[in-house]
Length: 462
Image (cartoon, rainbow, N blue to C red; front, top):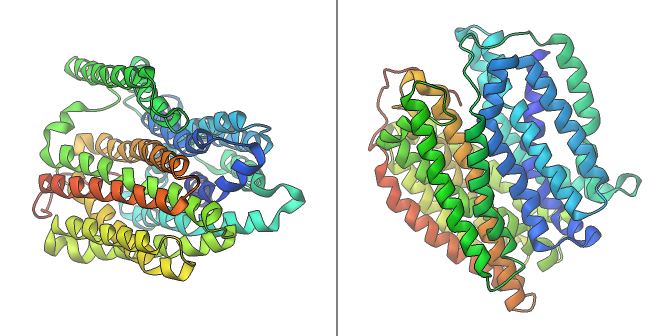
């Protein structure tokens, strides 16, 4: 029962990332939301999650995994209720950011609880269940979101997507309070509050003008100044982390990991890869619904083959191709994803059947990339830094998701405005940008180890 409850909480977090895409056109219509509001609905959640996930893990070490998990799920449930009741787009964006922060407190405790409840030789099934959640959420989100929109329970429309979390969250909280064991880390690392504040400030200075740029074109001078200041602040954050590490204290990010070539290269590829992928989901949903006039259910069914293909290809890539081909597996995945994007651009403006080849091929390319990339990036991480390496890998993915939504959303809505509502033209423009980034990612992939090696260190946490 304890395992079911912590996995349910993790699933709620993952589902809230995938399900919201399908609701954006309805939110825009009802709340008169601007393009920037829509981007912040997605990017605000992932940014808050990325900024808070390492801090959330530290809080669990300090105050107890169960206590922080309960606080996280309570806050996540309350924020979901606020999303459902949001009277304006501004309130909805703020509630989504709060959701992301509490999810960052909740999710890291899942792995800690699994390690606590199971002996090492018993964790295989629990870890497999945890790892499968992302694929399940990706497949469930578009269909569940569409079903809730079309059911329109009590006239709530898109709001039911958020209201659904409330009874589930209350049930999970009460059950977790009764069945989860109490424990905390024996090492008790300190929380780097200054690091949290510096990194948050730097990322906001970079992301805010990117998203605001979709409304103020051409960009004003302050936007460029803000992004430059953000880069300077982030450089200061790196120096701060190096200083803490040199003093033997507990930095948020173990900077020494970047000296491992596969780690630095893998994180760069992870970041570059998720920029176009996450931007694609935002722009594709806009094309299908407002652009082509599809219903939410039709749009959900159109994108559904993507996560299914991703799940199949991820298993194939990690278990079969990676041991034989090494980094070539990742490179094949990047090429296949690029082909999928080209097929989607060629089909833009037609019916849902014409999108099917591109959706399937794109999903296969994503699956062939993500699972092998994680293994190649983390395989040479020393055992003492396993948790830091895994946390850093996941954090980079979340940050890339935020930047990708901001960057490609800005391009999409700028093209939409420039071409008087030409959704097909705007979508095609984002595809060209995606192909450019995938080409850069392919070039960076040569930083990865040529072959997967038998590591002598303990494996990193997923």
